[in-house]
Image (cartoon, one colour):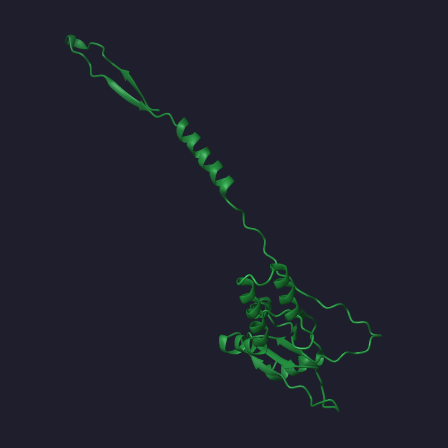
Amino acid sequence: MSEIAEGGGDHGKGGKKRAKKQSTRIDMTPMVDLAFLLLTFFVLTSTFSKPKSMELTFPAPPNPNDPKVEVKNGITFLLTKDDKIFYYEKEFRAVADAKGPATEIKELNFSQESLHKFMLDKNKWIQEEIKKLDDKLKAKQMADTTYKRLVKTIKVDKDRAFTYLIKTDDKATYKNVIDLIDELNINLVGKYVITDIMKSELDLVNTKTGG
């Protein structure tokens, strides 16, 4: 607290009283105590930011002795420079053969009218099926554990669900990969992997981009 120190009062010449001098000294101890109390309060009530991570699925290295399995419900994304996305469906064929024509890649971008619309069209049935489960869960016609199990089953349905392969060349950005995975998660995709791009795929990309 503040204190007032008084001084003076001596008689000067001629018997006149000299004016009293007053000085103020402020005690800062209560202010320091308050600062420590506030600091302690904020430390105890604050939540520190936690590092966020994204779960990625990588395929196991192929066994050269295993027979090659044709990808029936596969969609492959090829990411490259300038935020470009190319894709093709099913098995890749560098040249035409008895099973089908040579693979041609098509282009997408990260706009709502391109990649997002493409994913909505491909996974519409998944969202419709999960919507039915949501309605049953809200109506308490289904246990939460049953709901989670059925949602997982729908998302990895081997006959209807697509498997998405994500491949990049050395010009693609990390941001584009994350944006693509976010779009897959938004559309409730249950099967996607990140794997290496083949030379024949890279050649097609370079033909499209001139790189």
